[in-house]
Image (cartoon, rainbow, N blue to C red; front, side, top):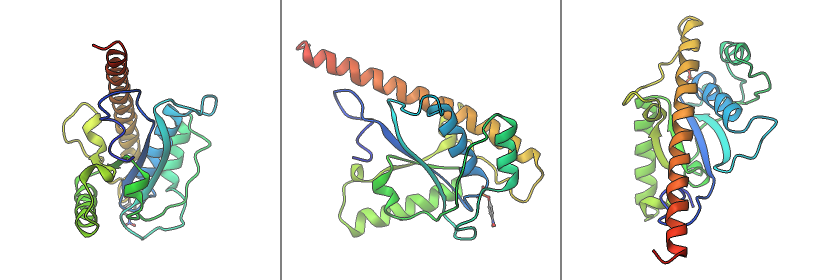
Length: 195
Ligand code: 4NP
């Protein structure tokens, strides 16, 4: 169940589903999705033990149905990621139950998602663990509170900066999951042996 998988008190960890969210879903979140897919589930090894579904979307509706920005695609291709495909979609409240981690690219989008989540919890009388958790993806990059700046109105270089950030954040997030899985395994074997 979303929100529960990582903090299960015992037993091996269930794979988690991850959603990347920016504003337009044509620049940053597809970049994060493409990189995360490539690192966690490369074509030759598509079954990562800790990762289930991966997707991206936007909090805005400006680009629904559009493909990623050509600069996102060329930056990915320059780094060997050539088969990524996506069509922009808008975030839906059902994403809170489909995904365990909802990774915002910046504070504005994180705040927006946190407000939606609070409203949904209240309206439906849900407990916190029943919905996926909203996080700033930058929390996993090793630099506290780091945002991925919107490169849409800037130069191509902004996409290269975003690429470096999402690679670092992806590796940090996967390391965190691996540590949590190891801790869950240790707890499970302790339980089995009666410790
Ligand atoms: P993204 O960038 O949120 O990284 O996809 C943007 C793309 C388009 C717009 C804003 C941000 N726009 O306003 O059209």
